[in-house]
Amino acid sequence: MQWPCASLKDADLGARTTLRVGGSVEWLLEPANPDELRAAIVRAKDEGFTPRVLGGGANLVIDDRGLPGVVIATDRMNFVFRPMAPPPGADEGGGGLLDEVVPSARVAPPDPADDPRLAVWAGVPLPKLCRAARDLGYSGLEKMAGVPGQVGGGIAMNAGGKDPDGTLWQMSDVVEQIRVVNELGEFEDIDAEAWAPGYRDGRLGDAVVAGAVLRFEPRPKAEVAGDSRDYLRRKNAVQPVTEWSAGCVFKNPDPEVSGGRTAGLLVDEAGGKGRRIGGAIISERHGNFLVNTGEASAEDVFTLIEETRARVAEHSGVELELEVKLWRRH
Ligand SMILES: Cc1cc2nc3c(=O)[nH]c(=O)nc-3n(C[C@H](O)[C@H](O)[C@H](O)COP(=O)(O)OP(=O)(O)OC[C@H]3O[C@@H](n4cnc5c(N)ncnc54)[C@H](O)[C@@H]3O)c2cc1C
Image (tube, rainbow, N blue to C red; front, side, top):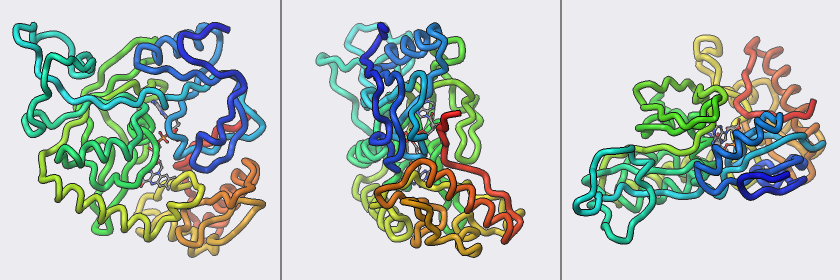
């Protein structure tokens, strides 16, 4: 089959996830830019497939019996752009920042503080984005330090967290505009004011994130770096960050329903920590993290998730909702 971008037949997906579980997919497409992404989506649909989109695979469990159809991976769309001053005499009208991202040797970028924005394509790793912001003295993503995955997945999931004092922080805090490929296969720009994301849910439906414009607050670089380090240290102290996991398995329930208890605490109280099925184990460090000890099959993972959910429901009456996405073969 001819695809409008790089493609791999029967490509292994497990190695592309942070849990290291998953079989192969019939077709893996690897667009290098938003135009190729759009073309890949349109072609896949024309061929009768419903393509899935894979970012950093940091919140995914993939069936290891293999998936039919098409997965589109955004890894190659790994570009961060600064706004460039238009060349002298150029028409300043026209498209938005995402249309101006081809760097020109003729123009110097403005002082970072004059326009503290970044245009990013979907495949930019979140840690790379955080480093870029830090090095420019841009504040807004300090708390995202240590969150794996890519910009597209981060927006689709509205990645984020909550401080011990209850302060919420999430990807949407820095989004000015998102460019998606919509259900009609067309580019569409969604301004932050028109975007209504929820908790760990970008609520973008079937739209695929191609890129975004992010807006920050200028701040001394040393302060951004210091806060990022502090957050990373805190995260490393409570999460099994060096092990193979898919991040939080469950969403934190409504505090009114759970009496303010997080999903991790509910699992812990239900005796879930340390429970093991095959090579999958609920982390002793954090009850909401399921870890692959090296040999876990997807079935081990699916079964342990269900067992943990049932255990919590029986113990506390709280029905936990999945945060992690499951790509199961039916
Ligand atoms: C150690 C560890 C710590 C973590 N800590 C946090 C944390 O603090 N906070 C947090 O929120 N998450 C956390 N996570 C989970 C994960 O980092 C985030 O959910 C991240 O946003 C996932 O991005 P991704 O690119 O890996 O998405 P993937 O896992 O590849 O995909 C997740 C979902 O997003 C969809 N998707 C991916 N790319 C696109 C796109 N371009 N357009 C539309 N849909 C897309 C996929 O189809 C899938 O449904 C953690 C994970 C790990 C392993």
